[in-house]
Length: 587
Image (cartoon, rainbow, N blue to C red):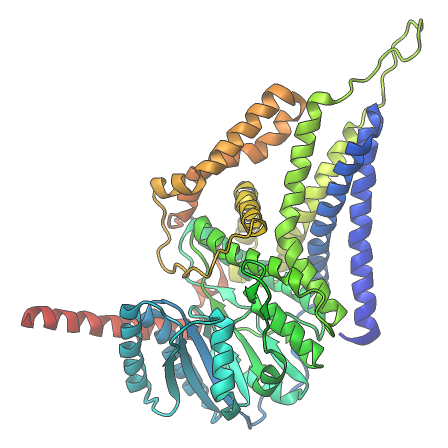
């Protein structure tokens, strides 16, 4: 969708979100009018307005995704590929065997596709640990040997990691990009089917204005309760919300930094990133570079698109809440840093709006927190109704109850979170999509449990997000920590250390509510109890899942590239064990 149709869609979506937010604003003012409206009531209503508007915007995108079906663009899926492609895997202190075996699996998948397209692979190492770097080189040699990859596989390790991942990609583009027409950018945990890669290249060649094509990666290999909930959400809900995003963004689409293909000359000409004045977190190298690169491509007239019909794109996710929070801390800093880029000259208006959305994703929870704080802080000073407003009048006056409005507002706000997901489950049942998730009953049960689980961990994630924003605003640089892969089980000690401050905050909040705002105490329990139980929730959710819920299609029919990866990794691991046994015997 483009042109006037896209503009009309965006206007309708924005006006709808604003109307929902305004409704919440005026309903809250009605509730506060029982004892008269003052400045504090208006302030609290404004917080409700902003928070509800943000929730409504997300819900509307989900509803838009429900009313349409993902369709491929017009192109010839059998057209011969003319251009030359490089697949880039940046690595940073990753397990070399696990990461590089993914490249072997993708190369095998491409080989099985039987297409003569010229496709090379490059491992771009930013690893700082010398032992890991040595293992990378040994494993890379094994990769080249197994895949007969001399002249097709390349490895280079930078002497310094200036600019982190973005600098790593830029360094390759500057030094070697001229040899290629297209570059598929991965993360160290990315996997893509060979046929998917080939169709991405064909779509690039079918549309000369296409500068970047993003796929929707689905989470795989999750084992913990938290991980499997995220995996289910990514497979069941995300395609629908991505459809709405694709409709809304049109040719000014997203870039999520991996599992995407770029036109090399467009990227080289458009995506040189500035070093922002000042020190981190707001200055220095751009952290959340992907959205900036998408905006720069759009500024130069290139199409940036997410094709949500493409399958065969996978990644792994964090297995526990702490690892999720660590990754989210980096994203928080990067998104807030975009406030320095909002005014950059020449950007498309929608690109600026996307930056605002990214910033709002992290500061919106603060508006809910401020609303709770304002409600609790004002409760002890609330004016009690005057039942005898007229002197010498013998009969009391009972102000009209606003209970119905309060309940309606509560239901409406939570409905923005719940209804889109429930509608996704209904649609999946009607279309037959639910069969891939265990059937209608199991997909509905998984949806309900995901809603319960996400509500349970929401206060904990709210506190981690609040701390992240607070740290960034205080000028603390979170850096670029190494991702934790594999088994994410947390001990009780680790859980307590990570969340003791959340427990204390929850206890303090409930005690305050009990003694100073008793009328709010019951409403605070859904927030306070999960905070107090945070160590238990962190530990429990990091344990392996043993239930029958959260099943996804790839568990019933594993994707071929995942089977290939398991095969390669198993073979390499056996060979390494045998080599170690021989060395021990000789030693």
